[in-house]
Length: 184
Picture 1: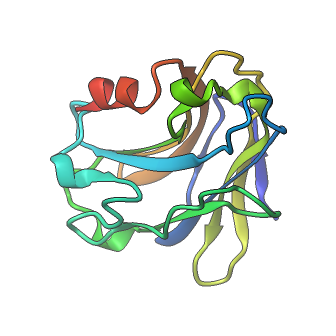
Picture 2 (picture 1 turned 30 degrees about the horizontal axis):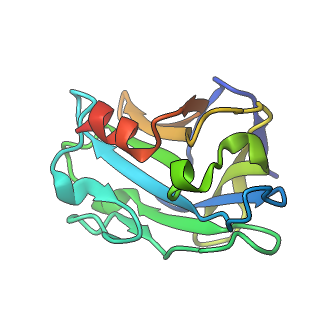
């Protein structure tokens, strides 16, 4: 049974191979434009910066150079139940310099489409064991992000040779570019 996390809560990840599932629903857009939410992964070292451009994993760079992080593809609509996008992680392959994996969801072309996370509901991040498909952790975002166009859902980090997950739930209004500036 999965542990349901609250914002800021941290838990150890007890599986070497796991999948990060991300899901959301969108309200009917009054702007007339469809929503396209995208998952991005920043793979970082001790300095809280990505190790190299190739360690920024998203729909146009789906696998990290060490093969430890794989984005399974872009869901353009978010329709249906369950995970909208998934990221596979194999800690046995992770580059030894990696100390943190940050998972961000952004709204594609949010400014031109006049969209924000206030129009998104039922957002969640879950981690499940790749071998057994058993949910380990789940965090449901409950905040109302009325101006934000990007949200850091969570981060996986290494402390004392142990990998943990932190439920973050922090938004930014500058979209993906704000996170690129922060972590690059």
